[in-house]
Structure formats: structure tokens, C-alpha cells
Length: 168
Image (cartoon, rainbow, N blue to C red; front, top):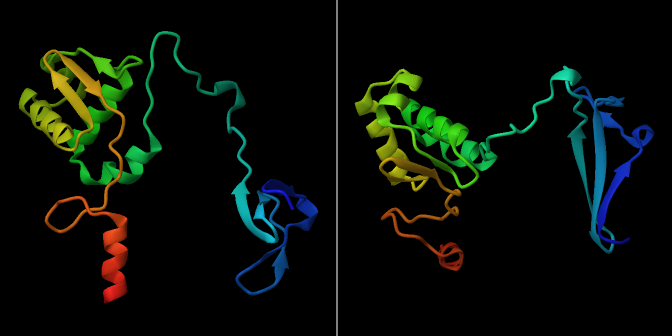
């Protein structure tokens, strides 16, 4: 079998319910991935259809913004509410290079925060390497690469971690 994805026909999709009886789940599609040879993995995915097809979002004609899903998984939970709000604002108003030039007073008014709160939120984003700042420019940066950390805060190599685990 060649490596790659194969969609499994709906009539072949059978799932077990909690009671152990078989049932077909028409709300899902199943794909089989072959990694070569006889090894395969099955992945169930929800078939998603727009709820309101006439209102599908499109990129703006004169803007460039998105929130990376990795930000939500790896960074959002560790930010304060003001830090999260400022990051979303800067991502929404930035250009294709992540740059924006809103004054602190304007951001504070738009976000309904005090200027001091905007400054603290910016410091939080700077400390986490999510933005760069040189007045009046802010830049939303590509997300930092994930790192494994030692308790001292220094980066640790995966090989070192595995060697420690082998000794224990």
C-alpha cells in the first residue's frame, strides 16, 4: 500500500456506542492513512458545513490579520485579560508585516482600558516575545518556537531529557 490518505466509504464506517452496540455515525468521515507497508491509522473527522452559507468570512480588501491557532493553544492561557485583549487588537489592526502604529491613548480608548493598563499589557507581550515595540510602532511577531524548559528556566535538549529518564 502506498503512503497517503484514503477516504473510507460511509457504508464502511461503524462505531461502537457506549453500550457496545454498533452504530453508523453519518456526521463523521473516516480517513485511513497508510505510512507504508501494512501499517495504517484511521482518523475520524467531523464533516463541517457552514451554518449560514451566505455569510462566509473573507479576507478584507485592505487588511491583513489572523490569530494563529498555536497562540490559543500555547500562549493565551498564560496571559492576563489585558494582555490577551491587546494581542488580539494588535493582530486585528496590523498590516502584512504585523505592524501597527496606534498611539497608547487611542488603544486605551478602543479597548476601554487605562493607558497604564495598555503599557502593562504591552510589557507582558514583550516579555513573552509575542510583539516588538519601538514607539509608535508595534509589531506582532511570528510565534516563538516551543522550547522545553528546565526548572532554572534554561532550555534543555530532548536528548538530555531522554538520558535522564533512562537513568531513573
